[in-house]
Amino acid sequence: MTLSKTFNFRFLILIACLFQVENAMSQAGAGGNMLLNDNLGRPIAGREYVDIKGSPFLTEDWIKGIVKLENGDTFKDIDLKLNVKDYILLFKGKNNEALAFVKKPLEFRLYDRLFRTGYNLADKSDQNAYYEVLYDGGAKLLKLISKDIKEAREYNSATTTKTFVETAKYYIAIDGNSLVEITRSKNSILGALKGPKVEQVKKYLSENKLNLKDDADLVKIFAYYDSI
Image 1: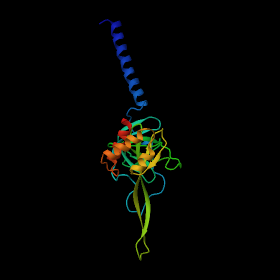
Image 2 (image 1 turned 120 degrees about the vertical axis):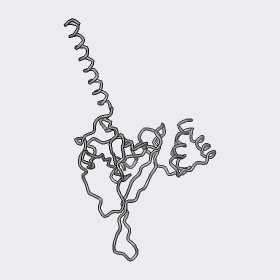
Image 3 (image 1 turned 180 degrees about the vertical axis):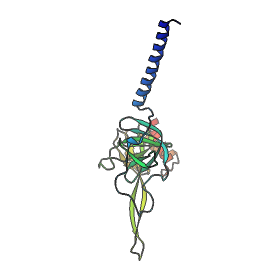
Image 4 (image 1 turned 90 degrees about the horizontal axis):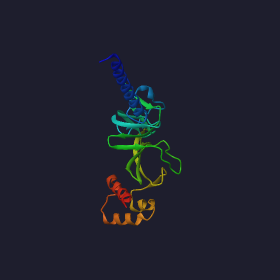
């Protein structure tokens, strides 16, 4: 191989390597999986919950998940834990400490459960809440899980006991990100849905024995609504 051909061959290899590096960087910037480091988190600020039975977290254990931040960055296979009292998503730092994201997470997955923020309520409450997306179609079915502190005093006792109590509310979003709260009842669901499809959904409910207290059966209603 002549000197000229050797130079040209090495030059082509260099160009190919640079192209691969640039392509990998552009994929990461477009939301591909990136390496999460502690610089993207901050120590948890605010009060600690002491002398309260239970936990403010959705689950006690860390769960492997996927997170998409407001700047578009996506991180996979990281340990996550959701505080449903204050609606703060935490990740585990390199020293096993709990850190909050500096950039706000827009959505994340815990196993097969999808959570998302950015929905609007008429009373402007829960602006930072994370809703579990039970059905993600044209009509979205959302579940808001929260924990509040309840105080109770036993009869003839001066001691007050504080306990975390979990509650769940259900919402639908049909037009954009505006939410309508529903209860798990036939009348509430039909009243919140819009357009000519309502009568067909009403017929579907009468012909199928669905348990409206079961999330899986609720999802069937909205999947049917989208199919007609």
